[in-house]
Length: 276
Image 1 (cartoon, rainbow, N blue to C red):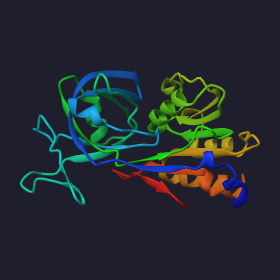
Image 2 (cartoon, rainbow, N blue to C red):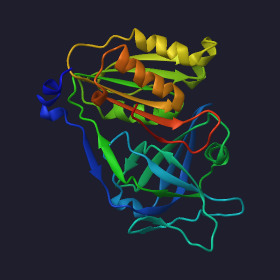
Image 3 (cartoon, rainbow, N blue to C red):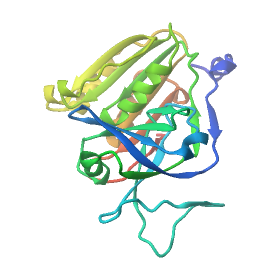
Image 4 (cartoon, helix red, strand yellow):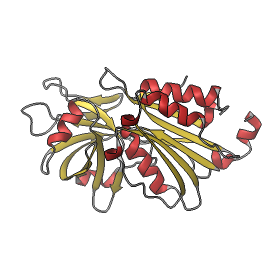
């Protein structure tokens, strides 16, 4: 796709929206196990009255209590970012998608993928109403217009909250396909949408090399004519391979791809955009 073609439809311009940085202490009101691999936690607090999340691609920084703490240490917003109490140990923090927000009820849903041992997974495994979490942000939103001729959403269990939210928000008549890698059939969830959805699931239990299986499926996934957009998130090495395949083999313009690492094998706290 040429640069002039990309600029021909201004309604397809991807926007970055900045939000005022705010930190909140919220209380757990409900915990629901959606399947053995996904736990939904509902948080509530009056501070959510001015919460903003303009995109399914958003993330909040979640602060977890340390052992022996009832409530996590939540920083204050300073002119250059978060400011922590120097006399208290810093909390463990991880990035999560705002899955659902109800302003009237002052409720926010987060979903935890129970995929690898870590502080977030350990907390979610014992979560119960009455406990507390801190959240910061979102600091900004990467808004991908719904008006693209087609959408392709790619990810693993960690990306399911964002994918499910996007599908719920897309209008009727939108062409969208998903390519989701999950542990096995028990990780399957129903995807609610008004859009015209074609869903593909790749189960790691069915293959000796699940990364190769997803890349093989992507290599032969039908991409319609017109202006499309691909959003992908999951394990860092796989997402880099996904982006390279889309650019080098499928001929997509890199400006029509958003690929992110939500985690990385053997490391903790990995979250970032993949630009190469």
